[in-house]
Each structure stands twice: as C-alpha cells, then as structure tokens.
Image (tube, rainbow, N blue to C red; front, side, top):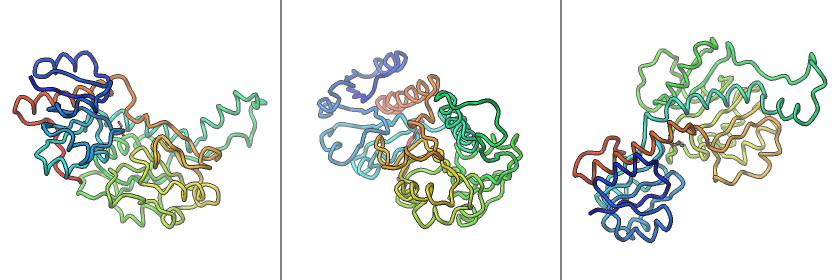
Length: 307
Ligand code: DGY
C-alpha cells in the first residue's frame, strides 16, 4: 500500500479518505518517513526543496494545503515527475472577509481604540479623539485581480469606492485597470493580492513606498516579501503612508524590529483563511488531490508552473 506523509494534523474525514488508498505517517517525525513516502501533504510553512525531494525518491505528489505555493520548488518537483497541487477557491471568501476586516481596522484604527479603552484611557466621547480615515468614497487599489482580488473588490461596492486595479493576466471585471505607477500613486487604500514570485518580491521597495499617495493605507494579506518590511517601518514613521494593515510578514514568524512599536499599523498573525470550515476545506482538497494521484488519476487543482 502506498504511504502518504503529512506534516500537519488531518481532519477525520481526510484520514478516512486517504485510508482507502494509502497508509498515513506524520505529522510526528514526518521527515523520517520521507524515504518510503509516495505522497506528501504539506503546509506553506514547510519548505519543499530539491534536497528534501532527494530524500523522498518515491514521491508522486506534493499536495500543499494552501493556495500560495512559494514554499515549494515547483521546477524541482516537475523535473522529478512529481505532481504539485494547491488549494485555490476554497479559501477565497474567508481571505476576502479578513482583508476587509483588516482594511476597516486599519483605516478606522479600531484595535488602537480598543487597546486605549482597555488601558482605562476612555474618558467619554471626545470630539477629536480616536480619529481615523474614510473608507467610503475612497479610491481603492487592488494589485492582483485573481480570485481573491475579485472577491475583495466585490466587497467594496457598498462602500461606494472607486476600484482600480493592476493585474498580470486579463481580467474581465467592471473596475478600472491602471498601470502600476497609477495604482501606487493614486490609491487611498492599496491592497495586495498577488502570489510571491521573483517579479513580486519587494514590489513595495523603499522607492515604491515613498511614491505612495500621502495619507494612504497599505494592506497585505498575500505574502510578506511583497513588501520591504524595514523600508515599511521607515515609511510608516516618516510618511507618506498613514497606516498599514498586515496579515503576512517578510520572515514569518519574525517581525521586523520597530514595526510593533508603531501606532499606525495593525498586525494579524497570518489568519486570512483561518475559519474552521475553510481550513477543513483546504485539508480536504489537499487530501483529494493526493487520493486522486495515488489512484492514477488527475489531481483536482494542479500547479502548472512557477507562475
Ligand atoms: C494560503 O493559502 O496561501 C494562505 O496564505 C493561507 O491560507
């Protein structure tokens, strides 16, 4: 019987499905089981590189329980005939919801106000206390009009925002497509929804951050390395940014020194897809991919290339 190694705890339904076609090892000591493994279920926190693959000569599938797959050397997998899969769609709505939670918290400074009340600083309603920015009628820039970008854009409608976007592939959406430079320099709220690739690494470098619209907000629920985090700290201190909402970081779980001391940043611990139903769906989709490949079939959601 084939062996599937998992790096994380699976829901019971996933374990039952896999039991039809494979024995299961892990997550304890999963690395030790690699030499015998036919399939691998893994997470975005597991780097899957050529060295690891060389220790797993029988592997036929690497099933990532995440939509992003920058943790996997896809070329090294494909060179070895290994199928790579991810989990698109199932986390789109949860991630879009969390993005909006972060936008509203960042622009209206909700966590800061809550912290202040808990600290005993609330002295009753104050005309000039706890002021934030406006979301309604603002210009909303979206970088990356894929599944999550679209779901985030849809949620902007009730706020009467002008939605503009920059994207790599053609997107048939009722928003204004603009050049990156326009998105960067004219958006009141700029939200990132692109994968981490060599092209998007440090998309927001020091120079780009300095060109952002004065008083604007930067939101990142995609991947941390899209932003040069040290440069972000400086830009949040000196402008032009009014604030940032981050769910992802350049070197998770490390946070760049200085970031947490700033009062105009809202920080979350990479929870975009963290609903029970969504995480179950991600685990199930990864499992179904492994199940299909081990039975000699096609995976449901293959990763075709690095892009
Ligand atoms: C992903 O799936 O890539 C997210 O970052 C975690 O859900």
